[in-house]
Structure formats: C-alpha cells, structure tokens
Length: 411
Ligand SMILES: C[S@@+](CC[C@H](N)C(=O)[O-])C[C@H]1O[C@@H](n2cnc3c(N)ncnc32)[C@H](O)[C@@H]1O
Image 1: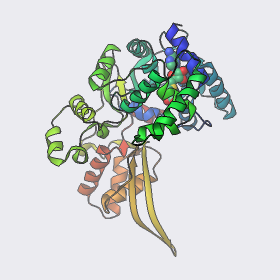
Image 2 (image 1 turned 120 degrees about the vertical axis):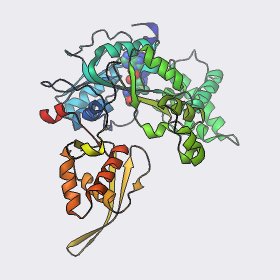
Image 3 (image 1 turned 60 degrees about the vertical axis):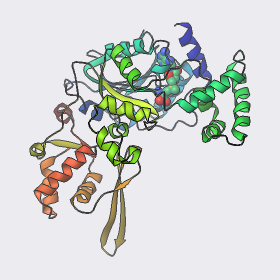
C-alpha cells in the first residue's frame, strides 16, 4: 500500500464515513442501471454488484436488502468500517453480501467474477486516490462488457465554499498535530469565524456539522475536484465512456436558471457544453454524478410512439408518488397526485390522463406491458392518443424505464 493510501486509511479508520447509526440508503437499483445500456447481460447467473469504497456499507447493505436476488461485494481499505458492515450484514441475516479489504489503487486481492461485475458503484471515493484515473482504469478492467459504473466525484464549483473553508483551516491550524487535536483546534477556529458579523451560511454550516462530516470536508489529506472538462478527461483517461448524467435535467440550464430566452439559445448545446455552461453559471449540482460504460457499449434508445404497446416498462425506482385523497362513505376522492423525481420538489400532475397514469404507476411494483396500461386507461375513458402522449411524457420525465428482456426472462 502506498504512503497516500496508508494515510487515507488511517484518516478514515479514525472517522469512518458517514457518521451516526447505520441508517441504510436505498442503494442503486441494479436492473435500472443495467437498463440504460445497449448491451444486455448474459443470462444464467445472478447480477453481481461491486461497491468500490463502501465504507460502513450503508449503500451496499441497502442494495442487498432491497434486491435479495443480486450478489453484492463491498470493498474498502477501512478495516474498522468493514468490520462494522460485516456485523450489520450478519444482524440482518443477509446472505447475498460480502465485504473485503481491497485497495482501489491496485485492486490486489479483488475477486472479479467470471465476465466481470454487472454494476460497479463508487461514490465519493476515487477523488481520494493519489491517481484517480488509474483507479478508474482498474475498475474498468473489473466491469463486464455490458456493465454500468455509477460514479460520484467532487465538483470544483459545488465544492468552492468547502475548499475556501479548508484553506482557512489549513492556514490557521497546525497540521503536525494528530487528527483528533487538529479537529478540536479547527472546530474552535471555525466556530469563531462563523460568529463574526457577516459570516456566510457556509461558515455556520461548517460550525454545525458533526465531527465525521467536519474532518471529511475541511481536514482531508487527499482529495481532488473536477470541473466539467476535467471530469470528461478523467473518464477518457480511465478508458471508459460517458453514458449519461445520473440526473440529466439537473445538468441543463432551464427557464428558471437563465430565463426562457437564454434557455432557448442553450437548448442547441450538446450534453457536455450544456453541463459546462451550467457549471460556469454556478447552477450545476454539488457533485459530479455520472453513469459510465465501456466505449463499445452505449445508451439504449427509448421506444417510439408506435412501439409503446409492445414495450415492457417498470416504474423508475427514484420516483415517489404522493396522493392527496379524501375518504368518504364507501368512496375515495383523489384530489391531487404529485410526482417527486429524485431530490426535486414534488410536482402536481395535471388532472386527466397523466394523473390517471400516475395513479396506476403508483401501485405498480412489477414490470408491465404498455398494452395493459393502454387497456386500463382507455377503459377509464381516455383516448388511445392521449394515453400515448401521457406515456411518452412519463418516459421523458423518467417515471418509468424499460428493463432488458433478459431481466424479464430471469425473474
Ligand atoms: C467519503 S467515504 C465514502 C463512503 C461511501 N462510498 C459513501 O458514499 O458513503 C470515502 C471512502 O473511500 C475509502 N477509500 C479511500 N481510498 C481508498 C482506496 N485506495 N481503496 C479503497 N477505499 C478507499 C475510504 O476508506 C472511505 O471509506
């Protein structure tokens, strides 16, 4: 293990990330991720997921709990966090998850399943390596040809205020002390500065976060940040291709961010240019979250209007449906339906066919054929044309996705 990795390990073993009780995240939905790629996975074996830099396992354990038929491997250098994650898996009686100590700078000791991992996730990790591009290149070697890699690295603009505070901490705190002493000292400095008249919210937040978050943000010993062109260079150096942003609309300027007329001008930009524009305007999301694939693979195309009836759909795992309803004597009146995409505020769905579709999707946790949805909604009195329009809207807004045929045959 090189000296940087040793130091990073020591850092995280003292302050395993994230803090607090082990609240599980939902984790990535493997079938949804695989549905994005043109190439289908071969049948005959379970989906294999690698969480590269799993730490305390909150994402990997969530993934394994909600998707019992997939195999999850979480790796990290942090032995304290791995021990805790193993204990948590045992307490939850999970037999589809394992944890292993693996350094992502070398991948030495990583057991890559035959054909590679179908899905690799790595969130907030590669930017802590001495050579992140080499780490990405190694992960590419472990990714199946049809596989999808979900990556999160720091954004330069999203991290600007954090970097400024770390710079001040760096200048005023003696870095020759142990990390615990640095923390106490840095907390006192930040508290003082957060109380000065005119201190920005960033300082107040820094004074309020817990110790784990504080060291991770302001006392890190090894991290790098990316702007949009640097991110794309990094992906190229890793030998992978950009599949798409995890949240594409969040990477396009719209009428709210730059006004309707300028948004119209920006609509002609390609994905990278649009993202760079948004990043330069300071409106980009706080971190760079992307799906990547092998260069020979690519984004699967979405069905056209004429293909909707025979296409199989599944409700998108990151959509939440909210229903406002009133119960009366032997009757229920639905007064509003709202859809919440990822981290956005819920949006009320217009009454009519779109709302009827949202209500059916709300209760649908299995794949379904478009034809069945047409039949239900036509029976409710909507025209085939309006159902098709609502469906195309649902695809664009990612209320639904189209799983691969191989997943349907396997389940
Ligand atoms: C900020 S935490 C992120 C943890 C987790 N992915 C999450 O989203 O909560 C960074 C993790 O990367 C791990 N890490 C850093 N360098 C590593 C390396 N060379 N090999 C494996 N893991 C590493 C650290 O031990 C730490 O657990």
